[in-house]
Length: 364
Image 1 (cartoon, rainbow, N blue to C red):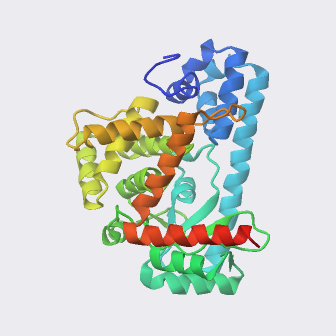
Image 2: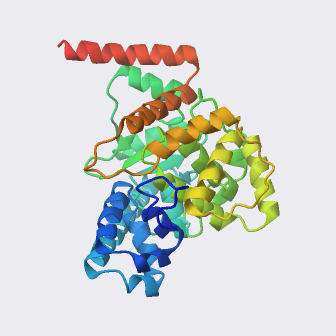
């Protein structure tokens, strides 16, 4: 697989093959590791990569000691972040009313469910989901307990409360992690709008915890939407690896895959799921069965999206200047992100406001 032309470079030279199969490590030279470690660190994948390699002792034993040290440091750093998440969740448990239904999303949910994909992962924050009717109750409980919102202006506050799917981030003074309080998994103005009733109807209790998680299929759909709608597609290999782990964890049979496709259709995310399965299969070797009854995007749309994602999605070497194509791809990904989050009129108003703020700030 080394140098496989189907994979984006330079991540496709060694990082992606290693994530697919730890045995790839057995033929790598020290110079190969230098580039791979820098890419993995930039993608926040040093911990997951280290865990995968340690789980294959014949491959781990052939890795140079100085490389093992970097990988072990990534594993240790992830363990530290996992402990921070657990501490934050314990504090939140004390602050939130005991009768309030609270669902964990993304990294915190993966951690408390003890999913394999959580090993080595470093969450940035804690994401909570409550019903829209319970949002004020949860917000006021956290504020009474000492969490504070960090918003820059009245406009930003209005943006979060009226158009987003979450409140402005909250942080307890002195705590390293932010808390994002959600009432949905998609912005209320976005083009792909998940069905909240379906989400809340399939919540699952997390054993030995007061928290819940989304149903397995909804966790997959949420990861799909988060990556292919609610991101700028820049340096998002970690999001794709999350999807690979969820698909391997929760889907066993052809029937499971058919139900996933039906679930994506119910959440209006069929096209986003097509992209997710396509890149998981081609970049990470995810065992996606073929054929699937999932309509592909139009050919021109596919080509355009692939041009952008292959140049923006994988990590870059930090000391290498981006090419013109990479810079254009990042700008295209950013434009797509805004386009998918808001209808045209609201987007124009939002961008004009942000532009005016920048102009007036420069003239002060």
